[in-house]
Image 1 (cartoon, chains in turn brown, yellow, green, blue):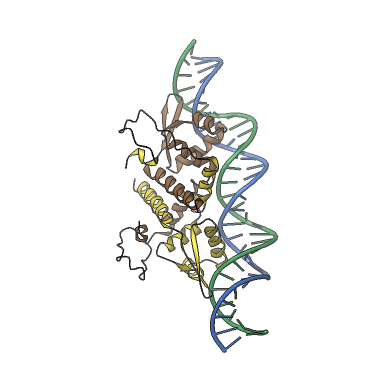
Image 2 (cartoon, protein in one colour):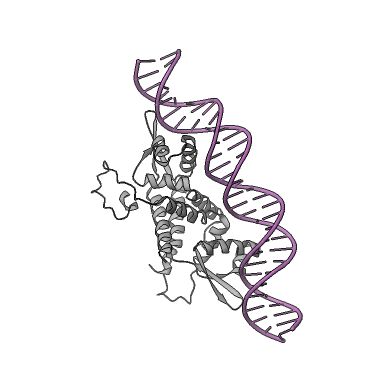
Amino acid sequence: MNNCSYIKNKTCAHHDHEKVLPAQDIALDTLFELSEFFKFFGDTTRIRIIHLMLSGEISVNDIAEKLNLEQSVVSHQLRILRTANLVKPRREGRKMFYSLDDEHIGLIFNTGLTHILHKKGK
Amino acid sequence: MNNCSYIKNKTCAHHDHEKVLPAQDIALDTLFELSEFFKFFGDTTRIRIIHLMLSGEISVNDIAEKLNLEQSVVSHQLRILRTANLVKPRREGRKMFYSLDDEHIGLIFNTGLTHILHKKGK
DNA sequence: TTAATATATGAACAATTATTCATATTTTCA
DNA sequence: TGAAAATATGAATAATTGTTCATATATTAA
C-alpha cells in the first residue's frame, strides 16, 4: 500500500512525494465524533468483548463467563458499545445476543492488531 | 466484504453461518496492548493532529498554529503519540517534524471515518 | 558565550470514565 | 399470578487522563 491511500478522492501524483497532498477537509465536529468512536476501542474490557464477537454473536452471560467478569460490568459496556453502533442486539426469549455492527469494526480491530504485532516484532 | 474476513488464517466455510468460527487466539496482554493502542485515537486533540499528518510531516509549531492550541499541549500529545509508535520524529535544525509512523495509522483513521459517516447517513 | 527560537517536561488541577453494589426490568414457565 | 432467569440501570467510588502554567533543554546565529 502506498502513502497516498490514506486520502480518499485524491490521486497520488505518481509517487512524487515532494508535493504534499492537502488533508481531506473534515469538519471539526466530525473529527470529534471520530475520536469519540475510537474511545470505545480503548478499553480492555470492551476490546475483549469485541474480540469474542469476531467469532459471531454471543449472549451477555456467555461473555461474562468467558471473560470472568461481573454481569453488570458486561452489561454496562455493552450499552456503551450499542449506543456507539459498534455492536447490535438481538433478543431471543429472555436472552440478548450481541454481535458486531458491521465489517468496519472487525477491520479496525485487525488493523490495530497487525500494527502492534508488527511493532512488537521489531 | 464477507463476515469471515475479520479472522485471519481462517477460511470461511462457504458462508455456512451455522458453524461459528472460533476467535483467533490472542493473549490477554496483547488484547490489553491493543486497547492501549486504540486509546491514542480516542482524543480530539490527537485525532486532529493525526488528521493533519495525513498530508505529510509537520512541525510542532505548525500544528499548534493550525489547530490553535498551546505549544505545550501539542508537545505533550506528540510525546504520547511518539511513545505509542503512532508518529515518528525527525529533527531539522531546531525544528522537529513529525509524521505518521506507517500506513496502518492512516488506514485505521479512514476506516473509522468511513464507519461514522456511513452511520450518520442513515 | 549570550540571546533567541523551538520543543520538551514536571506538577497540580479538572474532568472523564470504569467498576462496584444494589436494585429494577423483562421474559418465560409452572 | 408468582417465581426464576437474564439483562439493564443508577449512584457512588476509584482510577485514569488531558490541560495549564511554569520552566527546562537543545539548537542556531551573532
